[in-house]
Image (cartoon, rainbow, N blue to C red):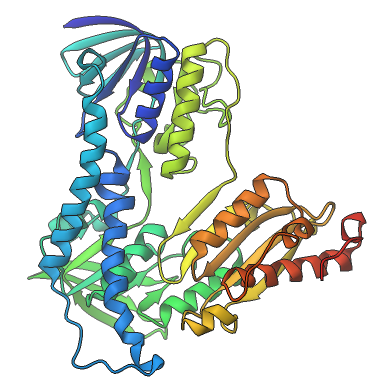
Length: 474
């Protein structure tokens, strides 16, 4: 057993862990980073990048279907070469992973500890059976894994998580996707547009990241027009059969159905990787899922010298949030016991479906009824959207009735990734609806739809009264 003494021990070499390690090293602390799995972040290996590669192929395949509406003729049909699609996904995915590996390769070898770490007390980690590390401070950055509920356990290799899809050499003929959340919608719609028969099942009418009932209902209808989606499904059984899985369920009309699919894709959520960390051997207070209780401004677990960052904390499982959290955790671990709040940006999440989905700022569900107004716009008759035949979607913006400040937004919209960024910047800058309306809007652009929603919000603020409505833009 090798013994080490360090200032900071970082557990996990993903986005958050690498950010924490670099911040602690920059502060001059003796730091090690411990990783038991393959190097390369979740985003690069099985998340953001390979999924966007699959989506890009799906979007390219889908474009010709709209040609007749533009008056263009499509001679024959577009054929999807499944092996070629997956070969590009894996080839480009490996390039992105390679960039991460190149970065890890530049780290001093003595700082990289291979193996799985486990706490044996508040200041000691054991890595497999070969290294014992005595640390002054630690950062938990162990990420998360797809959760697989018991109902899928008997399906063997026919039950897949999103990680498995990117190992395919070819596309299947059919899949049943369970969970119309961010991952399920992105992958399900992409597979559908690549010619795979898709059945999608959800619970509780939850679709995408939405908490606004009107936006969620619109999105549900929009996806149902493209592929089978039951957002509150009654699935009675999943049975392995030769060559696939038999799904017994009631369709949206209540009719009993039995369909056989090649695979079941489980997209029902992710679980923080904290179960095997030996946290029970520490004095850390844990929540119901076994995650240490922490302050999201400092990433400190209680008053201890342990910090947590990234998907492991089960807060905002997004790459940019993991990078921010890792940096904050690393800085504070290096400076402990002097701990300071770090920069936490306005929440921003985007789903790369078509139309795209986005939520930024304060969610509808987290607003106090009566304290805000909602500005609305439909993109069905919005000029630029209609010109491009991308006129599907709605956007809701929320503004504080006391001061007119923008609070948040939820949307299904063409180019929502750009609209959401504009709104996130405005919200973080503390702009009012009026101040945002004073910004330039070109014509004809999709952003004019945002202006329509802002004008609607301003009108509702004027109905509510207040000093913030005294000055108005035409």
